Amino acid sequence: MRPQAQITPEEYKAAREELRSIDARPIKKVAEAKARKQKRLRVRLDKARQKAEAVANQEDVPLKQKMREIEKLYAQARAGKGKKKGGGSRSEQYKAQKKGPRLDKRMRKDQRGQQRAEKRMGGKGKKAAGGVKAGKAGKNRRR
Picture 1 (cartoon, one colour):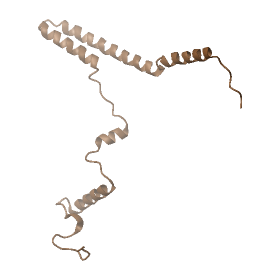
Picture 2 (tube, rainbow, N blue to C red):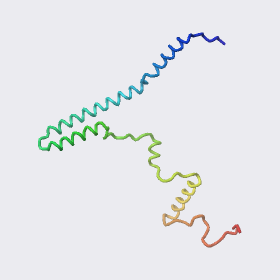
Picture 3 (cartoon, one colour):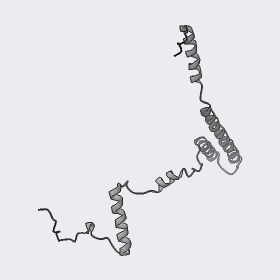
Picture 4 (tube, helix red, strand yellow):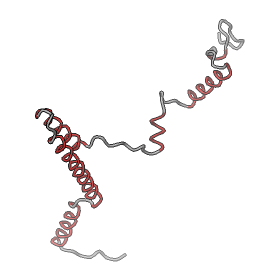
């Protein structure tokens, strides 16, 4: 093993301060994402400004209604409404499509069996549950 290099407490403190200053800086990817978000906001506000100018130039509309419309346009631009949401990953689409309670293996098998029985019956009705006829006790009945 190599012996550890001897450093003075001042050198240690200087190195530690340097690392702290590096850690305090924002992460590059985060900074880029924030810049993209700001850019999108600027674009939306520019579009809203153009629409607001068109609304302001209308002569047959009362001033109060124009003001309300312009405020609404800017509020929508700041909120970022009107964007279409993507489909998401396939697993998210599948999860969104599933309906009903979560089922364990036994419940799933029972459900499949019921579906098969309904298919055999032609969808005429449900069979008696359990396969035992009502009113009759099996010979292996507990006493």
